[in-house]
Amino acid sequence: MALQRFPRPVAVVAVLALLSGALWASGHADDVLVLFPKKLIRRMGDRTEAMFPVLLIAVALQIVWPAIRRSPKAFTTEYWLDVYYWYQSAIFKALGLFVMCFWINNKLWDGAGPWIPALRELPFAAQVLLALWLKDFVVYWRHRFEHTFTPLWSFHAVHHCATQVDILTTHRLHPAELAFGILLNAPIACVGFSPAATALAFTIYGEYNHFIHLNVKIRMPGVLRYIFVTPFMHQWHHAVDEAAIAKNVGVVFAWNDWIFGSAYHPDHWPEKFGFTGPPQEALPPENLLRHWLYPLQLLVARVRARFTSHLNERSAR
Ligand SMILES: [Zn+2]
Ligand SMILES: [Zn+2]
Image (cartoon, rainbow, N blue to C red; front, side, top):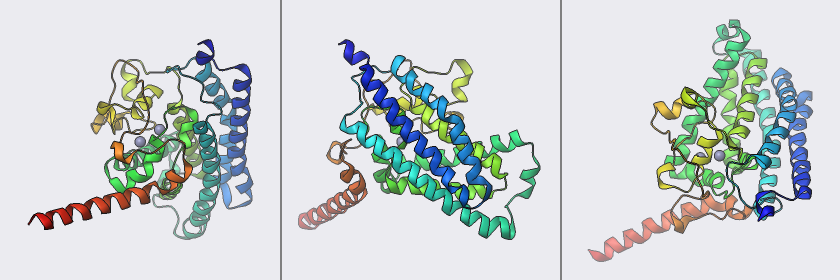
């Protein structure tokens, strides 16, 4: 029983070492790209490095102060798949940044310039806050559509098949969803904020996304719950519970959920996590090939269902 509550020291050290490796790789993937276009990538690399110790503390917190106690996830198939997804994200992020910066540098900053040049005149902190707000607002609606529009859900379902939600779950994403999310950064970077402000805003967003996935007992007191998303809110986003489906879709600022009617904030913590779609469309948490092919599988199932009901209607006439 004690083992179930507290992972063995060897397992803890191994998890931290593996996670450190993944985080180091994700930080240095950006560094490599300093060779490529200009300031945005370099700034992003610097910021990611700076967050490294903070993330290690966060992981330790998950172990000593978990919101949901459960048997250790380390070295299960689901765990190894999460580690894979972590590296996938690092690689895609690096490639995406390259494409994005190349495009921005060559097509925009060296050509017509940013869309709203006056933004660059604002104080640095205001630029960071505005860029962060814009990024979060765009992601809120993207995420909301992912939960309401079946073709998008067929990709996002991969993120929701995790049965143990923690910091590693952050990057459990279908490659197509990941690529789409990265490409959505490009227009935000073109609006007109300085590269340093844009990079800092994107980095804060990325690290905050890690934070809300932590399995740590953190809720916001009082009015703050209307401002910031917490691990509590996002754990509910992943919960298997009818009342919480497609709720708490925000990542950084909680006000979008409260304003647009998608907030769910009960008094207790959720207990069960995983896939929330129809049982016949269930997606296993530990089968990579099934994850990749899931959009195709869902499309075939839907077309077949339509075809069958059409045939049934015709034969009934
Ligand atoms: Zn979701
Ligand atoms: Zn999530």
